Image (tube, rainbow, N blue to C red; front, side, top):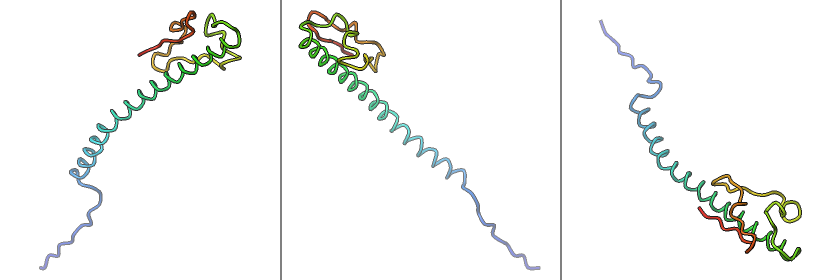
Length: 109
């Protein structure tokens, strides 16, 4: 009797192939996460610096209009700025960093 061996059509992936794909994805994630995290922190710092420049500019406009520095940053809201921004890093107002004698905001991280 003649035995005929039929080959089965191979479907799907082997375990080794799946492990290789998972390993490659893990390496890519390990590379990408620190880069993304660093970019987010850089963006927050840039946003904070932009807020400070905008507030200092509004304080100067207030000074030229009123002849004195504002008593608080709340005096700027409405006419000079739409709303008081918060630091994107610490999520706090810039009120504690405002010096009304010099009219400057000194804020650092």
